[in-house]
Length: 165
Length: 442
Ligand SMILES: Cc1cc2nc3c(=O)[nH]c(=O)nc-3n(C[C@H](O)[C@H](O)[C@H](O)COP(=O)(O)O)c2cc1C
Ligand code: SF4
Ligand code: FES
Image (cartoon, rainbow over all chains, first blue to last red; front, side):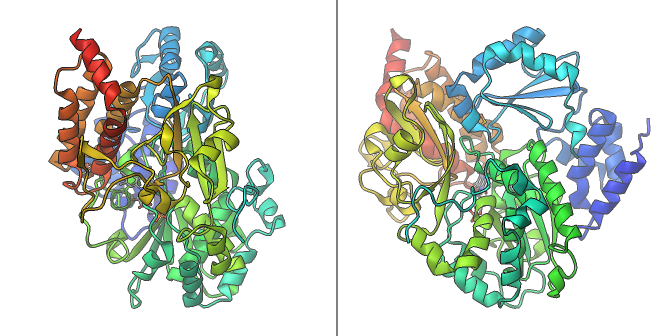
C-alpha cells in the first residue's frame, strides 16, 4: 500500500530541507514524522520517506534500523521509557520496572493496550532517579507503588511521542 | 576573584520559569552580551575565550579557545554544532540547562558563531528529550522573530541560522564524529580521526562541536572578560563546573560549584551526605566512562587536572602490579568527564553495578570495530555471570584481559569508555569480585 504524508508533515519536511545543503539530513525528522502519522515504520513508511527525500530505500532502511526510537512494529500510544541505568538502578529502578510489568501484565518490550514498556538507558534525569519519560512528561523519583497512579494519569491524558516532531 | 559556592553563571536561572521566555530573559539582561559581542572583532572574542581557560564540559575537558583556533583562517564555510545528546549515564545537566535557560544557549551560540564566522549552525539534541526539544524550538522561533537569529542580526550584517536536529536514540551520537554523521542523515557511526572536525567536519566543512554547558559560558566571558573567568577557576580550568550528583546521597541534584571544591565536600556538604546514615564505598566522578574513586580518595578537587593527576588517586591497573598505560607511559587515574557524579554506599553490590554499566556499553557499541563490538559483548556476559553468582575461576582476569584488548584499539573513545571503568573497578574492588567467585564455587 502506498502511504502519504499529511499536508502539514509535507510542509514541515520541505521547510527543514531548506536548512541543509541536501535533502538527506532530513531523514531522521522524516522518519519521526512517518512514525507519528503511520504508527510505526512499515516497509511502506520507509518507502514513503525514501520517495519524499529522493533517497535509496536501502539508505532509509539502514538509518531506521540504527536508532532505537524508530520501530518497525506497532506500539501503544504511551511509550513508557523506564530507565534502569546506574543511578536509577541504585535507587530501585528494577523494582519500578517490575511494578509496571506486573500492573500491565507484559514484560519490557511488550505492549498492553495503550502502553508499551521500554527498558531505557540513562534519560539524563539521574538526580531524580528512578526516572521515566513518556512523551513530554517526566515521572521523577518514582517508587513502585506509584505505578498504578502513573498509568491512570496516562489513561486520562495520553502522551504520544508524536506530540513533538 | 575565585568562585565560591554562591557563584552562579549557567544555573542562575534555575527554578525561574520566566527565563524560558524571550521577554523574561531580556528583562534579566538577556542578549545584551550578544550586542556587545557584535561590536567586537572576532579575533578579540577568540582572544578572550583563550584567556578564559574555558574547557569543554562534554567529557574530554579540551581547551575551547584552542579548539576554535584550529579552524583554518581562510575557510569559506564554517559550522558550529552544539552537542546536546547528553546520554552518558549519571549525567543530567545539559537537559536541565536547556529546560531552564534555552535563550542563554542561543545567545552563547550566536556569539560563538560570530567569532567562528559560522552561518549555518545546528543543535543536535537527544531524541528522548521531547520536552526540551519543544522548549528549545519555541525559544529559537522567538529569537528569529526578534532578530537575534536570521539574515542580519541586530543590523550588524552577521547572518546566523540555528536548526534543531533531533536524534532518535543512540548514545554513540554524542561522540562528535558520529554526531556529524547523524546530522548528515547517516547511521550514527564515528569517523576515523584525523581529519578532525575543526578541519573537515559537517558537509566537509570546518566544524566546531561544543557541549551545551561550554557554549552557555561564552556570554559571561564576553561580558566580564577572559581574565575574570580564568580567575573564577583553578589552575588551567576557568569558570565554575556544573555537576550532577546522583545515587545514594540525601540531596541528589544539579549543582554549579567552584572548581576548588573537593569530592568529599561535594558529597557531604552540597549533596547532604550519604543516605540512610551509611558510608561511601565508591564514587564515579564524571559519568560511567570514568574509573571510580574509592572511599579514601575523596579529598581531591573536582577539577579537570586534579582528577587526572592527583597522586592520592590510585592509578588503574590491568592486573595487580601492572599499571595501565594511557600511552607514553602515562598513568590513568580518572577524569572529570561529563560531570556525572554517582555515589555508591557501602551496601552496594559492586559486581552488579559493573554488570549494569557493561550492559549499557554492549548495547551502545555501534559495531564498526571488532574489539569494541565483541569485547563489550563479552564483558557484559562475563560480568553478568560473575554478578549473578555463576562466575568461573579466571573470570576476573578474563574481564581485565578483554578490557585491555579494547582500549586503544578502536575508532572512537567508546572503547575506552567501556574498558576504563571495568579496569578501574577491578583495580579498586578486586576483593568483591573474588568474593562473588568464591561464592559461586562454594
Ligand atoms: C562515546 C562518547 C559519547 C559522548 N557523548 C557526549 C555527549 O552526550 N555530550 C557531549 O557534549 N559530549 C559527548 N562526548 C564528547 C564529544 O565527542 C565532544 O568531545 C564534545 O561534545 C566536545 O565539546 P566540548 O569541547 O565543549 O566538551 C562523547 C564522547 C564519546 C566518545
Ligand atoms: S569504538 Fe565501538 S562505538 Fe566507537 S566506532 Fe568502534 S565499534 Fe563503534
Ligand atoms: S541513570 Fe536513570 S536517568 Fe540517568
